[in-house]
Length: 347
Image 1 (cartoon, rainbow, N blue to C red):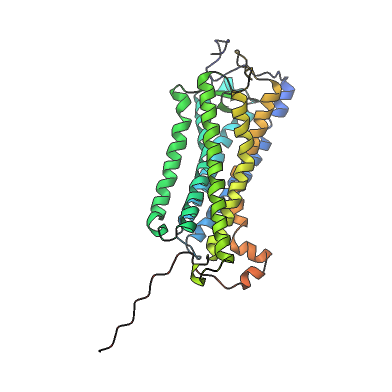
Image 2 (image 1 turned 90 degrees about the horizontal axis):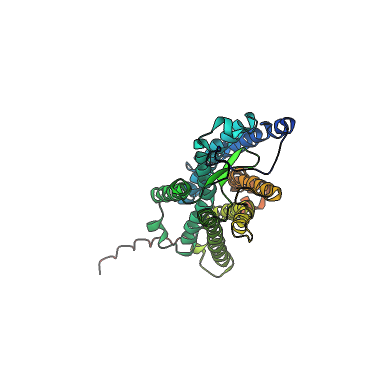
């Protein structure tokens, strides 16, 4: 526990001294509010496009669209919940002690940050697994993939991320207020509980990205082999299968660029020797600033995810590349059912 007993369990000394004028300048709520409005609007547009996609198109009931709907819905709720807290703390001039002396709000935000941070990475891995099975094992796909099972998988991902986020409330790790006093997150300390929780968060997120990369690489290689190989025409991928693969690659790239710097930083900081955090709970100014920068980069994932789907659709790509609309539609990667043989006449 921190040396100052008058502070709640989520408060630690932050190595910054702000004057009142500096605090008012830093605490301007316009930037976080604008960021949230842009993100929420982007996700609402994506949800409306997804709703229309479920009603038509070549793959109207694809489980991929179910996973994508779960991803966009998670991003929307993540921006709404965490953004509302951050904006309210900026409006309160970053004085978390005044509004939440018992640390209940800080603990809630810590759980939300872990939950909404891990969900996109885990859902990306689930989407990569669904496409891997759909492309490499087309015979078994109708039996293993359905919208109902896809929603069950989304619920399982939510339960896993929520369970991990609740661990600090059960004694593994701690949620503390972070610089500049507008958000709460896991503690980057060398204490065994804090280090274990930080490594668990970083490793689970990193493994999700690695699994997505591996499965997507195999799926793309399979699609390329089918397109350029000598398979029969009925084995060629449909346009919607290629479209979903392009969107999934975009989601993977966005998640990797946005989240890997933060995940690597967390793992490196909690394992640093000597420890990055002092026994009094202080981090250096450089470490505090780096954590804030990497967190801001990670939150861009919630804004860019919906635009990957909005922009990488056939309707948009055909406008940018008219030759795509002239190519005849190819058939499904899944094999056709054998047609019924004609009845034999009398012998």
